[in-house]
Each structure stands twice: as C-alpha cells, then as structure tokens.
Picture (cartoon, one colour):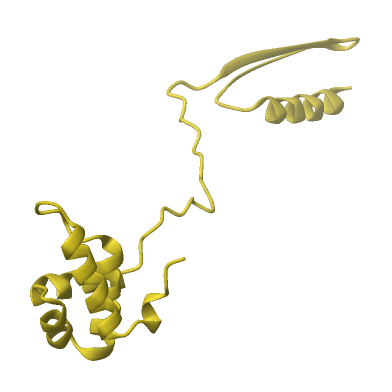
Length: 129
C-alpha cells in the first residue's frame, strides 16, 4: 500500500527517486506518483530546495505544482433547461357553425385558440337563446 505523500520526508522521496532512476530504461518520464511526492515536499520546503535535493528542473516542478493545485473542472449537468416551442409562421384559421331552434351562428376566426373560440361561441349562443 503506497504511503501518503503528506507524511513523507525529503530523504524518503530522494530514495524513491534514486530507486526509480536505477530501474528505468532509456529516457522514460518521471511517474506522476513521484511528481506528486515532490510537489508536496516543495509546498512545505520550497521549490528550489526540493528541486536541488531531488535533481529536478525547478521550473518544471513549479509548473507541475501549479497544475496539481488547480482543482479539476467537472462538467455539471444543468439544473434547469428551458424548452422554447418554435413559433408558427402562419396563423391558425377555423370556422365554427352552430345551429339551433332560433337560427344559425357562424364564426370564422384567424389566430385564436380553440378554448377562446369555445368561450366566445357559448357567450354568443347564450345571448341569442
């Protein structure tokens, strides 16, 4: 089980870097775990001191610390999504014809809803009846 980097000493991290340098083949990149340990130490003891002790480029260590210190941004799903119905280009048109004992009523409307027409026709029919 790996140790937590906030409890490591400079000597322990130096030993880990030396062990990694002994085992590496070619010019492989320093593992993120070692960079993380070095960054933690640099926050406590200073970038220049740790870079010198671990034989690291101070500028690169400083950049890694800046990237590690920035919290990762996660995509947050929206809490509310507004859906807007598309506007119709033409106006709805309809005709209502009513027939009763006393006569007929014909209403031709453009751009009104069915509920508005029903209310209007009921009011007119009741007034006539």
